[in-house]
Length: 298
Ligand code: FUB
Image 1 (cartoon, protein in one colour):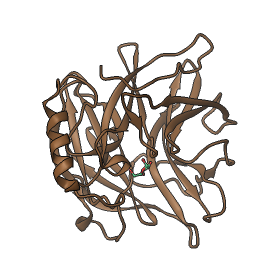
Image 2 (cartoon, rainbow, N blue to C red):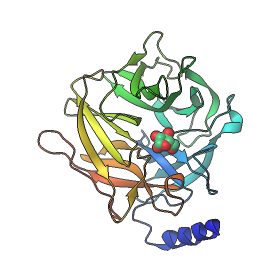
Image 3 (cartoon, helix red, strand yellow):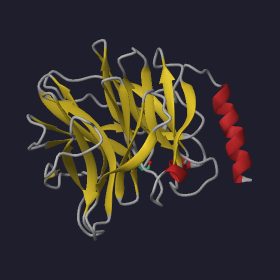
């Protein structure tokens, strides 16, 4: 019955005008990492929620491309967990382009994996571990890549035990993009309201870290990549139109002097286990703080 309801509701949403949020309605997707690569096209790398309800036991990833940020093409499965050496559900991924190659970073169990491709739409091959969390720790996940002052960095969220807070970890990537520089792990001090999905971007000399969890996206600002970061509050919360998932997670892209937030909503009856990807305009105040964003159908 629940599945039938989901299908009917899915059909209803699918038939609604296509140029509106959510920009990707099916398959169910979340944690979108929005990029514009050197070919001038836009790409989304994100989590793929299952059609059948369960917890987030995600087993593959899709890639989507667009010429205009409005109409998105699904390129199908680009990595399946039957291809990886580990046995855990996938969590939120990210991707990077360097010298005509594409690198896909994904968390699975105790590992942050990396796989590569000659194409932005995969398939991503040769998955292997770029980081394994230390023995006894309970979580290391949600990798995102950030280029800063000529180097590439990988940020993740990690925690040592179920009773201790999450904190961001920054690694320096080697030039080959598939290894971490030895001893480059930097654990930032636990930060106010920090949970998961850290994503970094730079604007006018300031470093912004956005992060999710708890039905909102919030952010921190710093003068340097390694901090100190100052908590600036929530900037993306739900409204009557769409509920922002309790797993809020997003990324930011600047294109043509306009900033965009890629994020996900709970639109379908499956709620936080069947999420859909949206893109919102993002604006800033004079002092660099982010203007609050509420979900739109635009
Ligand atoms: O999509 C699964 C998990 O939910 C992600 O890894 C988190 O960031 C949250 O969105």
